[in-house]
Image (cartoon, rainbow, N blue to C red):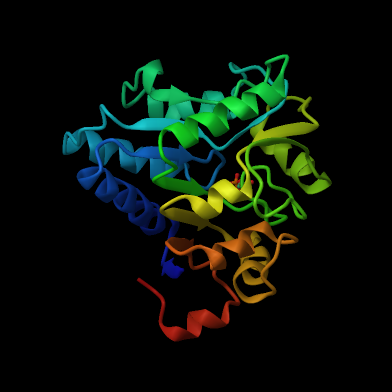
Length: 249
Ligand code: PGA
């Protein structure tokens, strides 16, 4: 695991976008898994800009979503579905044939999980996964205590996630469950970028990077990943002892 700390959110986002673009330059048929949320928005804008400017070929890439709010409509601007289409797929003109997202309105959610697991297996694993970190340390909707080797599953959202979720939805948020890739899929992705920004994430990043490693803080498992970059802005890195080791980029 490598920790990179940037002076501001723009530089942090640029670094993450460049890391993704560089993978795409040598692997034009990558399987990519992208998180939603406030943290990676600017990364996606900068990634779109670079891919377009340099005409990087992504016509053979395949995109999967990390998670979704169960029973929330795909058209709701708070849904992960809407977010990925708005920030990535539409600006990049990615056809539906290169995308698979959880259908969180499906009657059989277990079948949705199997479909996602089978697809990842069929495509020989995830090449790159970009994740944010929740205020409770979750990755995707892998809430504290979720098992380490899990695959896609449906989960009860915890109180922190439910309370934070209000920021994504204009009105009331109806979901009490999420559907998500599992920590096993996070740990076996060939490359991981974990991002956190802002001082509100500093306490959980300190726990994740300097506390005990374990499923009580799912983000701490990044330390067990063989090819992970933790990309922070300086506010999210506040209080890390590691900071004194000259990590600023
Ligand atoms: P955020 O969400 O990027 O909106 O802070 C992160 C997460 O909950 O995974």
